[in-house]
Length: 337
Image 1 (cartoon, one colour):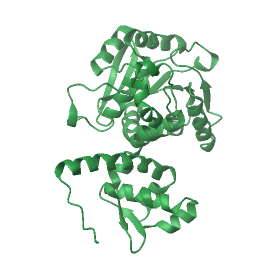
Image 2 (cartoon, rainbow, N blue to C red):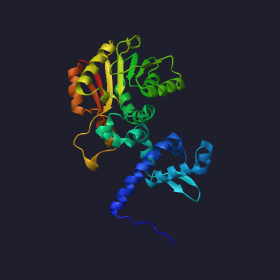
Image 3 (tube, helix red, strand yellow):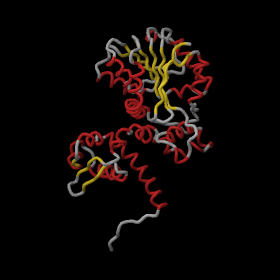
């Protein structure tokens, strides 16, 4: 018996697209990990067999990954030539790959354990497990694409000698700053050992170990130390929501002035809680970002709440950039009030 093409109803198509999208999200992250996305970005057509042999990856798994990506038109498969090429959705998927990586690799275990983390009877015994290394890799991509261009524009013309990056993650930002301003020294600060491992590799690869110092410290409890004394610019991206709730945020912002006694500017970039959007109007990333932090019982402030807390903390907003993606994101340049 020959089975013809499926004719799905609207409801069936909706469910199929939702399911296939979840598979494609995981496939996109895997494709990035094994170098498949980069090769597709560079070549008109990729020989699937040659790629699998050259990368020592399982051919069947690579085919499955490509099939999942093809279901969302990220790639186009040619079964005769056994090749894959960029589809109409490739450019956007490649640009936004950090969001998918954050979701499936960085927070994948949390979503897998979502039922137990919802049940109060089991929640206390479960760890809020996220992969700090994967999150660092994801945030590096997100920051490079969406936050760094307005950051460079904001810093252009500013004078500073030593920058400290709070929650430095992959060290991508301080490496960028050290390369763009050759006389500047930098301090990267992070509490996650997985993130610091990524940072150390990146600093060594950039041959900037003589100008960049990496420190294991908790931004929420840090105290003055010799490495912080000469810092006149502090940056903090994609972790400001960790300062909250409100009183904690105000105290942390005040502590930054104490820990870095010579700071003249604090540049803070983060994503806020969404306002006035619901259901199908939710933009990409917002749903995942807010779900993860709700499960972790971590408060996310709105933009207006940030404004209020900053005003009370002894800082003032000297400049501001609003970011379209991630939605409800900002960059503030703060100066001591």
